[in-house]
Length: 118
Image (tube, rainbow, N blue to C red; front, side, top):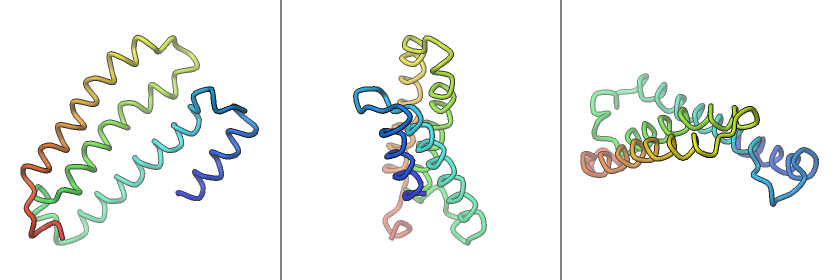
């Protein structure tokens, strides 16, 4: 996924959005999709392993939950950005999503046990 993203980013800068001064929305959308897919793959692997019994003590679980919730909420905003004046809407949605994501990170650091996160 990293190689595909890098190739798409270079193509986007050179041919589609043509400059680095403009927000690279297509690259952000593709990167967000890859992050959501990676998080889902991690959860599928956790469900198929014995670590499911102590999932709430895994720091990686809490970080993945936070990132998945954040990018699942922000991805529709980036997709609809061309159709909406999303500046005000973006500000009102970004704050709660950041609170949720960093709340999951903090919970993970508090709840996780060192012996399960080797």
